Image 1: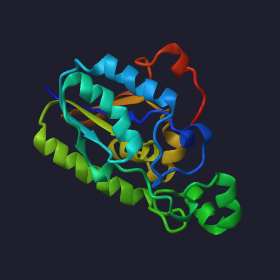
Image 2: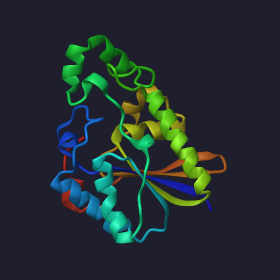
Image 3: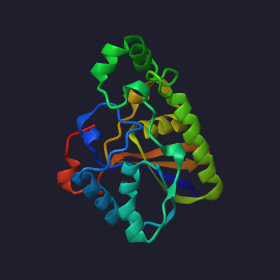
Length: 212
C-alpha cells in the first residue's frame, strides 16, 4: 500500500473572490466558503484518513473543521503549511505591485522561485518548509491517505517541487481553485499526480462560482 497525499485548498474568502495578494492576512471564509467546507466534510468524513494536517490560518482551519467534526477527528496544525508571505504587497493588487515596485515585480514574475515579493518570501523557501513538513508526514505514515489543507500558492509550489516542475513558473504551470483537491501518490519510482482541480465534492452552484 502506498502513501497518498490529498491536497485541499481552503474555501472561498473575500480575498480569493476579489483577487490580489493574501498571504499573512487571515480572513474567514465567506458564507459560500463555509458551504464549500461543509460539502467537503460531507463527502469525505468517512474516508479512512491516516492524518489531517492543516495550515494554522483561519481560512484553512475553517475549511477542515466540518470534516473533523463529522469524523470525530483532530486536525494537526502545521506552521509550514501557511501561505506565502507577500511582504509589502500584502492586501494589494497585481497592478499596484507592478506600479509601486516595478523591478521586484518584474523579477518575481520572471522567476518566482528565486525572487520574492518586496520584503516577502521566495518560492524556494516555501518549497523547503513544505517538503520538511512532508518528510515528517512520511515518517509518521508509511502508507494510506493523508489530508493536507493549505493555500493556493503554497500548494502549487509543493506540487511543482514534488513533480520536478521549475518553481519559477509555479504561477503559470499549476491552477488550483478554491476548495479544489489534488492527489499525489508516492510510488516506488517517486510521486505521481493522480488528480488536480477536483471539485466534484461541491454542489453545482459552488462549483460554478468565479474567483481565483
